[in-house]
Image (cartoon, rainbow, N blue to C red; front, side):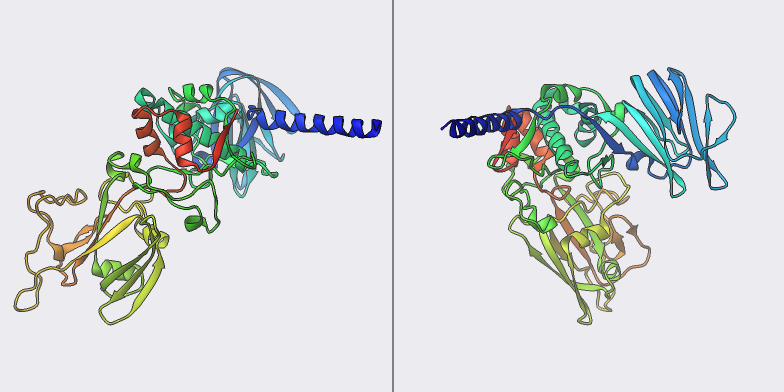
Length: 444
C-alpha cells in the first residue's frame, strides 16, 4: 500500500513538473547568429566598441577593451592578420578570437563594401575559406529587436502595434523551432532564416518585443512550438505548406485572406510583360505561342506549360517560372514578377497586309510603369522585350504575354501586410495569430 502511495505521489509530482514546464514562457537566452547577410564574405573589417566594456580574447590572451577600442581584421598572402588599437598588424594563427561583453553596449562593424552595423552582445570571429566568419552572441530578446523592424517596419507601430506583436511572437517561435534538436546557430539571412539587422534596426518595434516577452506559439494538442512561417503578402489567399515544401503541416493550411486585399501597394497587384521570343529563349523554346497554367486551390500556379510555334513544349513548376523573372537585388515595383499567384493574358500585335507588325499599343488604364513611354501612348507591342529589359528598336511579330499577379512571397502562414491591416481594424495580436495559424495557442 505504501509503495502504491509513493508511486502515486511520484506520478503526481512528475505531472506537476510537466505542467509547469509547458506553462512557463520561453525565457531569454544567449543565442548564436551567423552574420551571413551582412558580413558573409568579409575579408576585411573594422570593429569599434561604440559603447560598453568588453574583453578581447585572442587564443589564450585576454585584453581589456573599453569604449573607443578598435580591432581590425584582414588578410595578407592568404594569411589572416589583425590589428589592435591602431598598432602593428600581427598574424592570427589561432582558431577563434572573441569580443566578450563585460558590460556590453554596442560593437560597430564596418567593411570596405559599405556595411556599417552595430550589434548588441558579443562577437566571435574565425578565419574560414579565405574570409572571416562572424558570429553574434546575443540575448534572444535583443535579437528579436533587430528582427521585427526588418521583417515588418518600425513605422507600423503607429496604428499597427498589434501586428508588430504578432510578428514578434511568430519570430520568437521561429527562433525556438529552428534552434532545437542541436542546431547551434541561426543566420541573419532572410533567404535562410529571418532577416536580422542588429541594433541599427531597433526602434518602436522594441515595444512589441517587450510586451510579448517569452511568448511563443504552440500546437494546441502537442504543446510543442509550431513552424511559424510568414511572408510579406498572401495576395488574398494563404497557401498550404505542403504545396510549397512538400510536407503537410496542420498549423499552416490554406484559407482565404481578405485582410491582405487592397493593401501593400505594388505587392498587392503587380504586372509583368514579356515578349514571346524572350519567354521562349528563357526556357529553351522558340517564340512561345501559348501558355497554360495548372493551379493549386489557392490560385497559386503549380506548373506552367509553354508551347512554341513549331510544336515544341516545356512544363516548369510555378516557382521555377517565377525565379526566372524575379527582380533579385532590385527595388520592388509594380512592373515586376513577385510570386506565383498570377493569371496570364496573350496580346498579339496587329499585322498589316504584308504580315508586318502594326501600331497596336497599350492604352488607357493599362499602367506599365517600367517603360519610359508617355502613359497616354504606351509602347508598341512589337517592340516590347519585357518589363525588366524594356523595349527594342526592332519589331517582332510574335506578340507578348501579360502576367498579372497578387502578393509577394510563398504565402504560407501569416501575411505581414494582412496582420498590419487587421491591427489597423482593431484586432489584437492574439486574434491575428489565431487567424493565420490553425490549431494553435500562445504559451504563457
